[in-house]
Structures are given as C-alpha cells and as structure tokens.
Image (cartoon, rainbow, N blue to C red):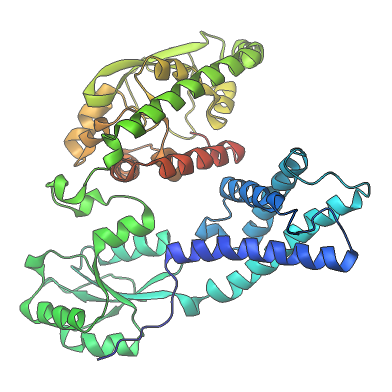
Length: 462
C-alpha cells in the first residue's frame, strides 16, 4: 500500500522556509528597486557583495529578537507587521551605523528611505503569502491519537496550543472506559476502522501515547502493519518534546535515563570552558555598566522601595549546594513575615519601582556577582529556595534533575514559560528546564540570549 498523506510542513521546515524566503524576497525587492530607480547604494556586483552578508546577519539577529520566527505570531499578519517594522528598522539602523563594512552613504539620502521601504515591502509581501498559503488549514498536519480516555483532551489541547498547524482529528481509545466529555471535534475511531479513517481523513501521522500494556493485540497488529507499509507512527513524548521544546515529565516513567540522554555539553570541557569564560566577561561588563545606572537605581529605590537596595536569599544551586543569591530588592521590607510564599505576577508585596526592576530584569543584575563566584551561570534553570525545593521534589517527578547543572541568570523556562505562581506552573517550567539540560548547546544558549532580549524589549520580565 502506498501512503501519500496530505501535504504539510513540519515546524523546522516552516522556519527554514521563513528564513529562506525572507532573504529571497528582500533581495529581490532591493534588486528591482535598484534597477528601476538606478540607485547605487544597494547595488550588488562582483566587487560589492560583502555588504549583503552583513545585512543578512543583522536581519536574522533582529528577526529573532522581535519574534518573526515565532510560528504562532508568524501566522498573524498584524503581529508580523508590527514585529517586521521593528526588526527591519533595527537592521537598517545598525547597517548604516557600520559604514566600514557597508557601502558609503549616498549623497541622496532618499536612497536610505527607499532602502528601508524596499526591505519591509519585500518582507511583508512574502509573509502575507505565507499566512494565506502555507499557514492555511489546507497544510495542517492531521494526526490520529492512540491513547486512553483520561489523556485524550489534554494531549490534543497541548498539541494544538504548541503548533497552530498540528491538528488532532480523531483518536483510538485504548482503555475499557468509554471516552466521555471529550472534545466533540475529535472523531472516535474503532480499531477495526483505523485504516479506513486514515484514508478518509487524509491522516499524516499516528501518535501513540499509551504504554505497550494499554495497546490490545488487535490494535498492536494494525499499527505494526501500517508501520511496515511505511506509514509514520511516533510516540507521544517524542512528538510533544519536538513541537513544545519541553520534556513531558507527567507522561514518562521514573526511569529518567531512558528519556533524558543528557546533552554531551554538560560534560564537554570545551563547552564548559567557553561558557565559563563568556560568563566572566559578561558579568564584568554588566557590573561595569551598572555603575553608570547606579545613581538612578539608588534614587528609584529611595523613592519607590524605601529600604535596603540589595536583597539576599538562600537558593539551591548545582548538586544541591545552597548559596546566597543577590538581587536588587523589589518587595516591601519584611515581605515574608508570615513565612515563605509564592510570588505572583500581581503580587501586592512588589513595590512600584520593584515592578519596573522585574519587568526590565534589572533586579537580576547583582547576580553577576554570583556568576563571578562560580555559584551561577548566565544560562541555566533558575535557582529555587530550599523550602520550595523540598516541597516540589516530593510532588513533581524529576524535579531534582534541575540541579545537575549550574542555575542561571536567565534560562529556557524564563523565556518560554509563564509566571510560576503554583505547583502546576512550576511543573511547566520544569519541563522547559529539563529540555535545556537534555539539549544544552551553544546554539540553544544563543537562542535563549536572543529571546531574553525580546523579553526585556517587550517588558515581559518576571
């Protein structure tokens, strides 16, 4: 049997398409404008081409910072327009401010305006085509979920939320309990009708979330037959991790070695040396620049905080070692007279100036001292308080794994997750932390740094 599923684009394929055609349309528009108006500022030739590489580099950096490759936002033209203008404006500004590497500024300054409009025009033309065609429902990846009735809604919701082009269209229930109160958009499929349903609904893939014990002999034989005929069948935790960039700890067994083949970077001496060197340079640079901001921070603290500038608190670091974290104080004095408690996004204990410090991440700056002392790294899981670690370790599986690496000033959970106000929120952040520990690399670290800049720019600090 020859399986030809409905055409769809994977997440990685869509991101490659976005980057490739962004560049293609930008330079196509620049070329047409240059030829039509006979402009020489952005003219490509055999002797003038290096500026194009710099333009691409600047654009990719600012496109990442302003979230042009966030697939959720890329599916909205309104978000694309706003983020595209910001990214292109920053790109053009940096481009003209580096004249040693870029063409000499033209006498006719109108060319710079046309340069900007051509880039933004080419970008928006392509992105409108992407939203209308590739991001349209016709290219959705349609899957059938094999799982028990308890997990069906939750799994389908997680997959839909993570990827707008990933649609669960039906399910095969693997337990003896009749599936009730499930999403009516999901079609229940009998085991004997599985092959017919795949053809009827143009299914691209089957995702299995049940253990082998939950799969009947009849269903198992059906899946094996489909697999032998070339139909794609994947395990749920693998799919979940791929599209959400989180490790689904609530769906895996306690044998974590099976699911967490930790990144080689965690023991790679070259990676650790470069990371430590960069951490030290970063910490020294930031602390030096903070001296310039210190008068303003002191004034804001006196007027808005009315108490000590610095705040120290015990946190759990690498290998469970407790250390004192240093921060600019953001809460009222004696904020925890009633005992340790979760901080919430609208916490009344946070002062007006403290809220500003948190949203801009300026309150984290003193932790550069912790970085220089070797207690923290620039990137890693955020260090938690001992009292909460004890509680969370008892309630959440694999929580202690966060401590196999140094805690960080920023991290994958901070740039991807929501504000942690409860155990459930902490579980979500743990999934991101474990993903970082599992896939730790220079590329992922760079991605986190760029997203941290986005967090500061969009005032989403926590």
